[in-house]
Image 1 (cartoon, rainbow, N blue to C red):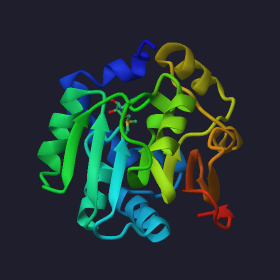
Image 2 (cartoon, helix red, strand yellow):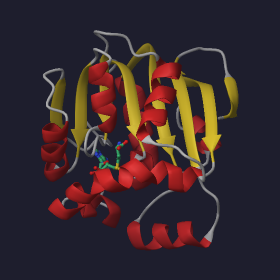
Image 3 (cartoon, rainbow, N blue to C red):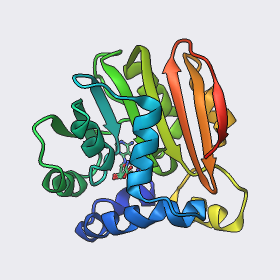
Amino acid sequence: MPLTAAQRSNFFSLTAWAYPLWRARSLTLLAGEPFGLAREARLFLGLCRPAAGERWLDVGTSTGFYAGVLARAGCRVVAADLSPVMLHAAARREPRPQIEWVQANLESTDWRPARFDGVVVGATLNETADPWRLLRSGERLLRPGGQLWLMFVPRTGGPLQGLLSRLGGLTFPDLSAVEAALPGCTLVHARRAGQVQFARFVRGGGSASAGRL
Ligand SMILES: C[S@@+](CC[C@H](N)C(=O)[O-])C[C@H]1O[C@@H](n2cnc3c(N)ncnc32)[C@H](O)[C@@H]1O
């Protein structure tokens, strides 16, 4: 499947240089309230509780935000991205031996299934060419009982999202469609902050809770 314009934009050094500046502010802009990286990390750590020694996959790591959070929690991380320049920038920002930087398209890998305790997808769902393939791939790589953490911008139906979809190939999925695309997982937490959706799934069973931040 051809890459979207948004995916291709990540192959430029300028994008890799500017991305951390945008990333540090993006959730505050999208949520409409102070939502820095430290708050995002606290939310993720508080709900997912990644344990030292666990093996996690960061899908579309960009400049390594989630990979760094996981490595500091003592996890071993495969941080994957399509873009070599993003991976290069990430490895410089997060020079940690627990992180393995891998260039791969996570919509389709021949990696052994059920090999991760956790999979995190921070906004890559919006950007990838086929988010449903990406979700199926993430589910396949997760062991039974493992966790899938998603952060994405869901559909609002607004004109800006329409423009970004047409020009950049972005997708803005509904949480219900995401849930339907993960038949082997249970949604256990859903949190919405303005235009940002967080969701935690567990492969197999789990008990659900949902609410606003
Ligand atoms: C919006 S950024 C993700 C940000 C990052 N997860 C974070 O939380 O800061 C999307 C990243 O995913 C990568 N990407 C997009 N589609 C991908 C795919 N199918 N497989 C692997 N990486 C992908 C892009 O190259 C880009 O670096």
